[in-house]
Length: 126
Image (cartoon, rainbow, N blue to C red; front, side, top):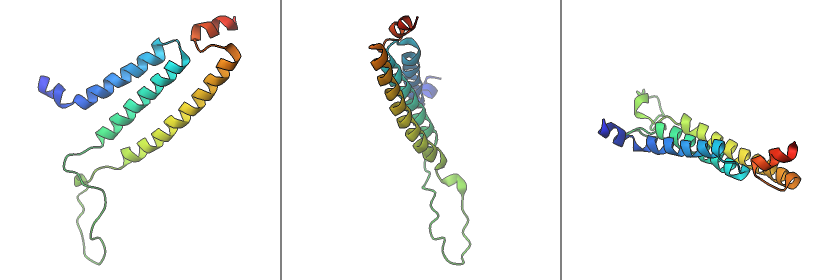
């Protein structure tokens, strides 16, 4: 049992990162800390998906010597799936744009309320 847990150490690291990000989103009252928590959470998910696409002994999904009239048998199981990597590139773009929008909103909130603490903002709104 311990060997199984130890062999999957990267997944445990991702779970720890996700929980740190989740705690920052839920437990912290400062809006910038919440944004940092969101980014940690998103980064952990991206790392998780990229690591699931890894395959021992896998090769790049490029068919070599495919020109000519020869018939080549392609063994799909020997190739690494590129789809998770492509999807995570899209997720990185979404993460960066989410960060930009969140920081712009935080700046607007700070200009209006002169604070970034959630409790103080809610108190001023009453």
